[in-house]
Length: 140
Image (cartoon, rainbow, N blue to C red; front, side, top):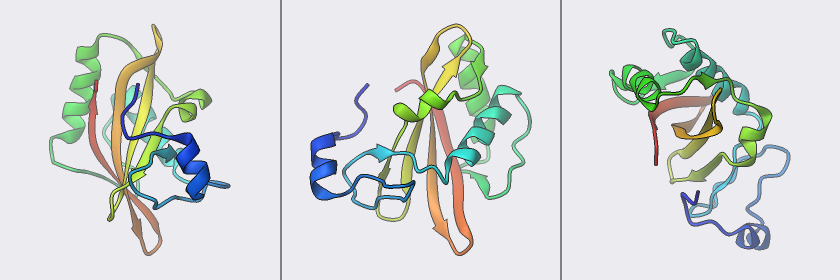
């Protein structure tokens, strides 16, 4: 599934690939999700899987109804969401948008493995690390 303008040769050529989990601010090029963000992103998905209230440090919602809408999107999809397997990082991507990274995480279900659902999160740099803003769970 192609979501952004993707060219692995371009990433390698321009030196924008992420090395050891460092973030790329190259813009217009999707890159793998940095390893430093992965534990928080896994925790977000785990809370979604458990259908619990979202109470994670440095994690906010783009709008008040975002979490309820995310849960509804998963229910409407009709399959049982599961925790992110390690292989999810092979296809999940991010891209720099000038003020934040737009991150798309491929979600997995018990029935399908990798599903059509994605979690969209914006990641912002803050003084003490990163802030994660949940945008949407949807089928692109």
